[in-house]
Length: 165
Image (cartoon, rainbow, N blue to C red; front, side, top):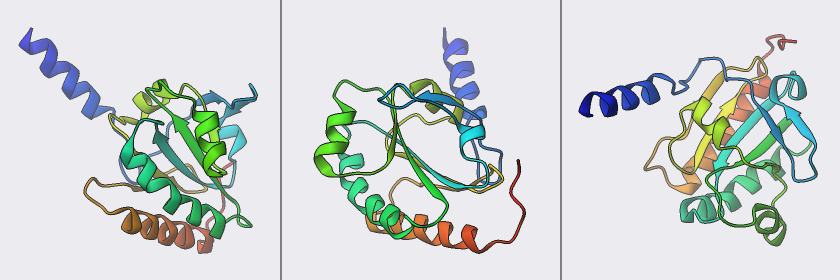
């Protein structure tokens, strides 16, 4: 029994995505049923992946700050995905009531597992070549997280490397 627990914890940690590692591809659906193939649909774009849930107080505190970052880069080639996980509420209503413009992906718990996300909010910034370039560390204030995300995006937008196809 103890061995099974140790192995499952080790496997979960071994599957966690790290900075500079390739971001795993994923398939998800928007609330309208539109399928999203992450690799196909984000070619050449910087992406922000937020793993969140309506019941998460840390997500509620962080999201207004992230919306300001999304607004700042609205004209740039940056996509913000809100990947809803472990949900028991209505994520569509939640985002609409608060005026958030993130691209909502429903039922994203399997995607979180592929990324090694075990809690909310999970937050990553991925470059145009689909490599993870920043991961939220626990203990950061919402303002510091937003500033770090914005600085990472700014840096990635000014890089001249050719995007992968």
